[in-house]
Length: 276
Image 1 (cartoon, rainbow, N blue to C red):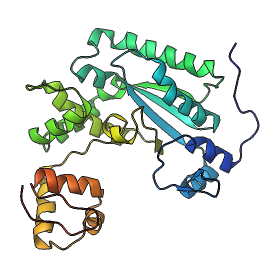
Image 2: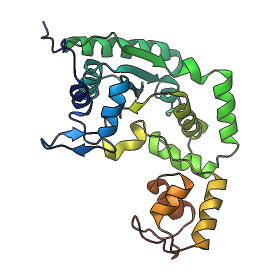
Image 3: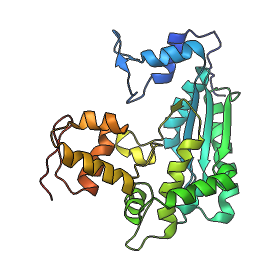
C-alpha cells in the first residue's frame, strides 16, 4: 500500500510558496533566498490573497509512461499547496499533429489519460479534491472560438504559420493543412484559459514550444511596425523597443532576424543593419 505524503496541517504562505516552487528549474521573476531556495515575492503576495489556479496541458499523442511522474509529482506539490489545478487534454491538437491521434479514438484516449493520471496521484497519496480535467474539444469547437481562429487566419501568413508549426508539430516537406492550423488554435487557446500560473510540461526550458508557452506568431502589421522603428532609429536598444511595443525581447529578436533578414545582435545592444 502506498505511503501517503499528504500534508494535513495548515500551511503558511511561505510553506505554500516553497511547495509550489521546489524542484523547478526556473521560476520567472524569482530569486534565491539565504537557504538557496527559490523565492518569489510576487508569488507570496498572491498567496496572501488567494490560492493559485494552475493549468497544465498535455497532448494525447501517445501512451503515458514512467516519465509522466515528473510533471505529476510537481502537480502533487501544487495540490498539496492548496492550488486549484486544471489539466487540459489537448485532444484536437493531438489529432492535428500529423494525425497521431485518430479522431475516433480521441474520447477513449482522454478517458485513459484521466484514469492513469488519477491513479498516479493516488499512488503517491495526493487528494484529488482540487483537480479538474478539461478536453480541448469542449471549447475549441464552439462558434466563438472557431470564429476567432478564422479572424486570426485572415492576418496570419503561410510563412509564419509554417514556421510556428515546425516548433510544435511534426512536419514533412509538404505539410498537411492541419499543421498550419495548429499555431492559430494554440494562440487562441491562450486567451481562453484564465489562469494565474502555467506549469510547463516535461521538456524543460529548451523545449518551450511544447511546454505550454505561447507560440510566437508575427503578423504583417507587426513586421511593418518593427521595420519602421528599426530604420528610423538604429541606435535604439532592444530592451527599449520591446518595452514600447509591449512584446518580449526574444520575440523582437525573432522578427528582426528571421522576418526582416537583419544580422543577429546581443540583448541590450543597438540593432545591426547588415543583411544576411
